[in-house]
Length: 166
Image (tube, rainbow, N blue to C red; front, side):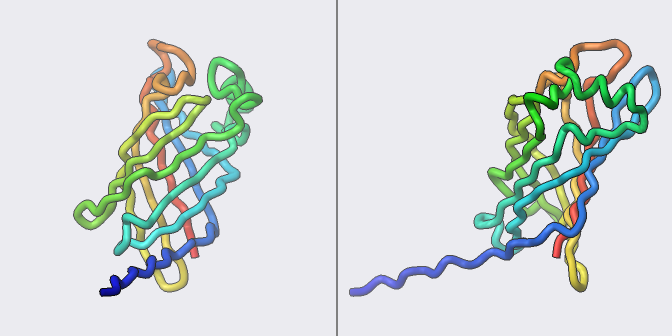
């Protein structure tokens, strides 16, 4: 008796059209916004086949921009991002799940050489000729050795990711 082999389903590999990676952190009682540029990603995603889907991306730590060049220079130094040694922040999905009308991903996030598993809720909105992946989440910068404990600088960073793909 012959057994029928199942044919693997091909998952769409999306091309990145644009990416907006931003963050906010409270510093001295004020909210400081910032961005990163130079996103590179490998997005293979099918909402109906999450087991075969994967999301992966990196940003260049040297592109940090808080609209204050002296602060940006300091953030690139050893006590924060140490961009000379750690030129990127990397995320890679290890599990993707459906959750109500959106999704929940478990990601390995690597910052400054330290990798942590983080659960990140995200949406994937399909439009006519492109789709939009959006995620909003918080991380603790101290978990990754970015800076040290401070009464002035909050440990929690709010991150927002919006990636347009086609």
